[in-house]
Length: 109
Image 1: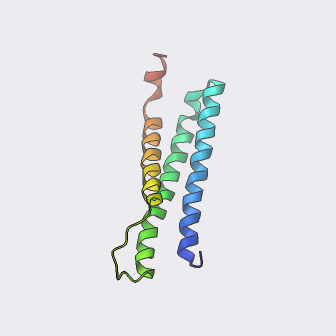
Image 2: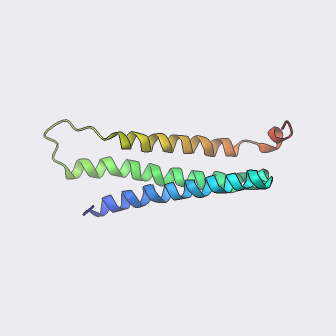
Image 3: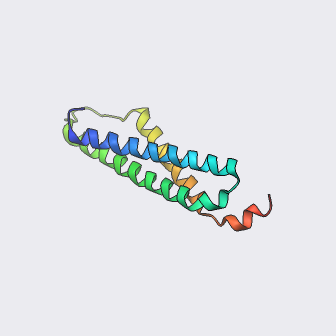
């Protein structure tokens, strides 16, 4: 971790993870309290913000990594990179689900 881009990538990923954790806790508390409808928009905004941070870091990482490493051999990224993309995609899906119209669906429950 001696380069600035590595620190920036780590900070963006950890910031996105912290925002996702806060969004999860707000969603969980809103379910326990019983006022889910009031917290749909803030949770969706937090999830979209986390997705933006994570996508920025996941695009920054391979670009800067390839610039700094002399690629004399074929190089593949670790499984953690794919896991991070998977988490980002699931966070995006969760944000979209929170954006759906909740007024029509809560009446059935």
